[in-house]
Image 1 (tube, helix red, strand yellow):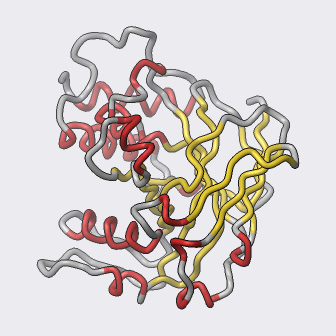
Image 2 (cartoon, helix red, strand yellow):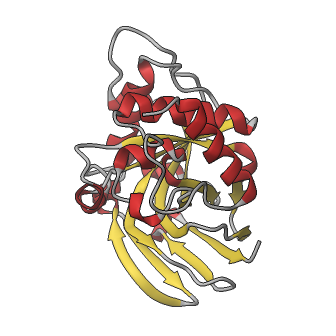
Image 3 (cartoon, helix red, strand yellow):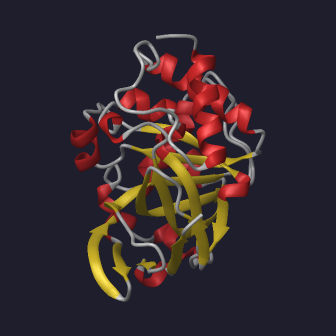
Length: 261
């Protein structure tokens, strides 16, 4: 691919403007050809945004998404602090918006620093402060033709637009079977989709283990960061001005509405 800085600059400028970075077809040589190149472009684009990293979204955690995007496993993207919102937020709908994903999100109370020894699921759960019902808002700065190009999507902020979190769930989640936890997506008050925690690597806690391992050889995870574990119900387009609500049963609910920018 061309210099990762060129792609990163185009993606960052497009994200700030709420526009697409280029037309379709994408110019020759613009896209990454390896995942290392894709993550390098993502990291440069994040740095160019000059917004603090609030945590990470994990994509490609469901079998359906992996098949659609031709993935062998998950991928991660940084979530930026000014684009993280509380329940009930009204969020601008940028060009390239795909929609919402219903996700179990976790907030860390302590660091998980880089180290030689692998992290296990219990290591990560031990440093979780709270679990929350959440929406990840997903979208592209690259054209739709690149959606199934996983390397392009990783470079493109891992398709993250924003993040919306609800009130912390009861701590009884620690002794509950999150794989069996049911999630309902309602659009304008009507049920649109339904899923369970099993959709994300078999259990949202498995996703925590995955990101801890991914970050272990990079810069680790830090206290206060969010981990959003991937969609339980796929991604769903939401009309502007219509509230989307995700109901997580005993673990709470979260709502979001899109507005025209």
